[in-house]
Image (tube, rainbow, N blue to C red; front, side):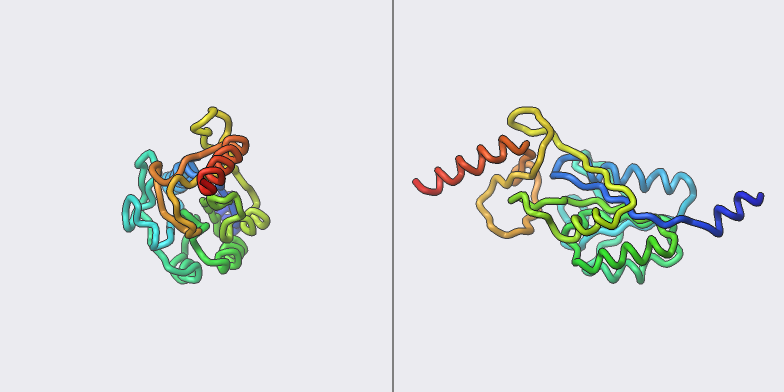
Length: 198
């Protein structure tokens, strides 16, 4: 009985980041962890950027079509308002949220909330993306997941964009992006440069 009371009073907060390229299973892992927390009778809430409506306006959906209900938000500050009395907070596609997310996650963890974040750590050019790199720095645990390079079968390094568009944020799927290892990505970039000079 005493152990149960201690467990209720002392809930250690933590920040867990799941990052990697597209098609690496980030959202799948987020859903798995959130479902385990729900099964353990913990109070959970999942958030995602409202711009991400690829599969569903409200659900977080993996590329394998596993889904879990979420709350779409426009700003990271909304999370603090909506996550009152919650044990575990999940955040998907966190690279699309503002840099205020770093303070939000720290605040939640300091309150004893377990925060699980999934997102791309690099954009299509291989540059650090949004608040994810800073979240990796303050996280208690970082899990880097990998897709498989579609050219050679090695572990993928980056999400290579297949369509001509220079916007940093371009929501897409397998028609717009492919996972490539570092070597195949360099070859693809060189081939594109040659193509553009013709």
